[in-house]
Image (tube, rainbow over all chains, first blue to last red; front, top):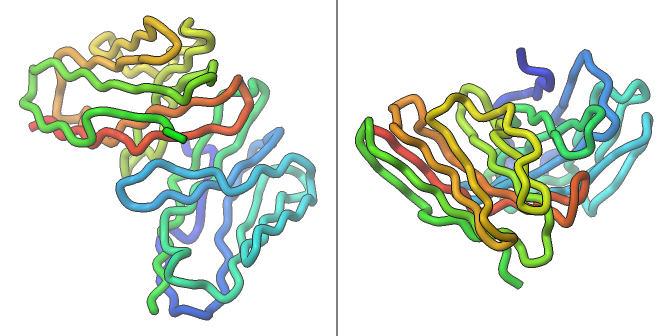
Length: 111
Length: 113
């Protein structure tokens, strides 16, 4: 059973377009993290959200944690080829070290 | 500033052989994690060490897998004997402590033929 479902699984867009990817669960998480992973590399942490309804911005990226702390979204404005990668969400429940990862959304931004 | 260093980057072996993956965490980090990534199952936590002590090995698939952390700057993940279903990318990650920001290595791509 996959606790964190990410959608879409694949997304291919043109440079300059906006996009939103989703991370959903039936479980409540104490915090949720978003990572970007490039080919041949490990995931790199982008942001951590901890409060229901929280919105965080990182340049052109906007992250939102659902009010019930069961879901999250990542919105990218004016996507660039450098945004290409696998976007992973990961939730923490209870213990502060154990993360449950989604399978990710593979984003390709074409020039 | 050196990040988490893993070796080898790629490993191709035959079924039944022993495989040893190596990890050097970031200096000063007290928590070390081994993850496995596959298309089917995504990223899964295999084992977690804190201050060189294994805290949670509930993700280790079976007795063929073992992990050690003899000191604060080195850890190994061993598979003996290896099987084709072990083929995956294995990541080591470290953090200052439990719940702190995770830093991943570049991974070891393991192929068991």
